[in-house]
Amino acid sequence: MSSSDDHQHAPGSSEPRELSNPVLWTVGLLVSLVGLAWIFFHFKQVGREHAAGEPVWTLPAQASAGPDHAALIADRSAAVLDRGEVLYGKNCASCHGAQGDSNPSNINPLPRNFHVDAFKNPLGAGPYGFWSVLTNGYGAAMPAFRNLSADERYAVVHFVSETWMKPTNKSYLANDDAKISAQIPAPGAGGANSEAAIDPRAIVPPETTYQLMAAVSRRATAEREPLARWMADAGTDVGPELAPAFAELRRMFPYQVGRMERLYAASKAQDKAAFVNCLVAEDGSGSADKYFSLMPESTLTKLYARLAETATRTPSTPR
Image 1 (spheres, rainbow, N blue to C red):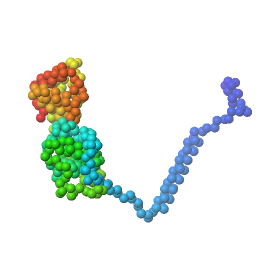
Image 2 (cartoon, helix red, strand yellow; image 1 turned 120 degrees about the vertical axis):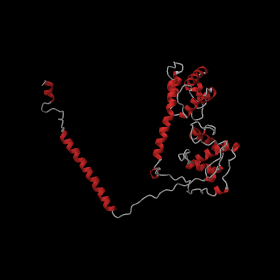
Image 3 (cartoon, one colour; image 1 turned 135 degrees about the vertical axis):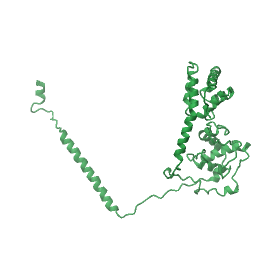
Image 4 (cartoon, one colour; image 1 turned 45 degrees about the vertical axis):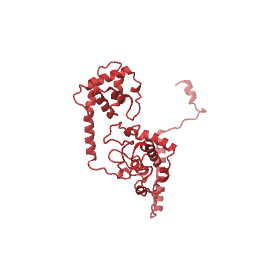
């Protein structure tokens, strides 16, 4: 040991001696934890003994107040129509088209053409009848939109009715007829179209639901195979000019099968106008495609020629 070490540990040194024992610290912590746990459970038991025999308190269920239908039906201001237009674009255009008269997602049965089609729901085409469809859905294809508030649904109703139905659709009604109006709940009341939430655990699907879902999945897979084969054949050895376009087509294929079917049909029929319209003028929601609408005309023509030539020799065709 060096002289410096001797000096540091020599008797009478002013530096205090370090006192540390890991075993003692561990035992102390364990004893403290046991003590705290005993205190917690002791007073918990004391509370239980004091509460024995007392009634159980439960909060009363809060009924959801229904909307003021009359006020919402009457408000067709420009602000409401503008709001409805935005909500329609986000929630409805993918099925009914940006102008309410097309089927960009290729849904079957066909979605309603708001310009000409009559309403089939039993409450009719008036504001409340239309609102009830958005609230409860209709048939197998039209979902309920309870993710939208009551006033948001009425905004969509007024936008569609006043913008597209009023000028051309004979089924347009500014107000529900007297028989339907009598069924409209009073402000704050419930009813069939109340805003009460539905517990999804209480909904029992029919026994055939999963069988039908499996059948639909198998059919969709079978219908996609010819499209996938067509796209794979056409996209082989295309060169650097067309390679990015085929990469974009492959990217959108799983999400826009209906659009791909229309592209195939136009290519098979050698209909360049329909091909260009489908590829450039829509992206599945009725809007202009952000990629293909900026493509040079010469490249678009080469893409059409390639897809059309391949479609004519594809052995099996999609529906």
